[in-house]
Length: 467
Image 1 (tube, helix red, strand yellow):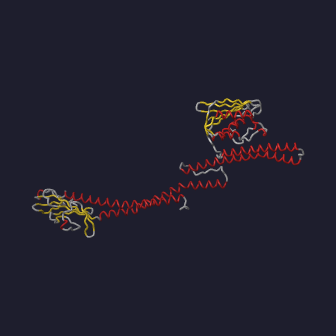
Image 2: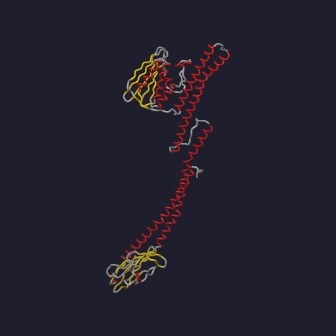
Image 3: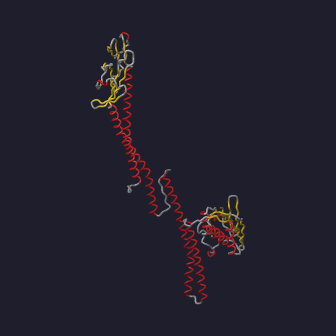
């Protein structure tokens, strides 16, 4: 069973359950039909005896009768019995006969002969056995004037219900299996057609996997069922994989480029020191260059590892209630001590503002924004940090009066490794990896913080965090 496909499992399960249902229905039909038919025969026996009672009349003088062709007359005492032609002697297997009080047969015939002890005593429908066969018997005394001593007896064989039941069972024996076969065939066709898109899905996915072409998409035709929904999910997944793959290619290319420079410098300085350095001062100078480049490589690797953890969701988030006012104030004090380009940092922080967030990630986010403001600020410029509560929002902004960003580049600043050379300068020694703002964006998404940027080329930039 484990080796079967889902399609075959469904068909086998459906077929087995349908066959079981057919068998159960047949058994129930046989049981119920037998009981119902027996009761139905008893009711018909009762009704026919009562109907025949109305077809018997007594006349003192035949001249006063209005006989119709087919009526029969029997001499009875001082008068005549008129048996109407509507009298059902034998009808649908039910025999009816007329008896006198002594049990003598006056009219009709009986398929069975009862003992004297049972004569005209079956005033309720009784079941008797005669020559190995079961019969239902019903006796009814006539109540019309002149007929008080007469009885009608009705008899029907139980085989009548058995024959009908046999016909019902025979019909069920052919009809129910035929319906079951049609249902199974229909189920197979529906299942086959339903799973056909799955086969196309698997085939297309295999082609994409073996061909290493993430630009292909799964095409199984139009539709709104679950299979088409799954195909759409796969297509969305492939689209994201394609985007991520392209980003990773760019990521690897840019990271290799940024690491190549310090590695080249380290190798060059090492070769120079080994071949040309003669004095301790020359060796010291070469080692200082190697140290700076090693620190730069360490910073690059650290940023790449941190960004990888953010991107893949392995960075553990530990939210807690913190004083945002104290956190921002402390970071501003630290950054003032590291002031570059004689830039003045001005803070305007409202007190007693608390948020539930991850302190370490938020510190890194704010430090990246301040480092960015210093790096691209102008000499003797300013950086403004402002924290305010506004209705149900908390707004933290970092603003500078530096070189700014053009409007066409403003939407690209959140991309990894993006650096607007024309706006930021061409000296790569003064540039970062282009990961700072991308990290800010990633951290804000993890902490459910909205981040916005506003900038004018040549006048400065402002980055706004909304809690």
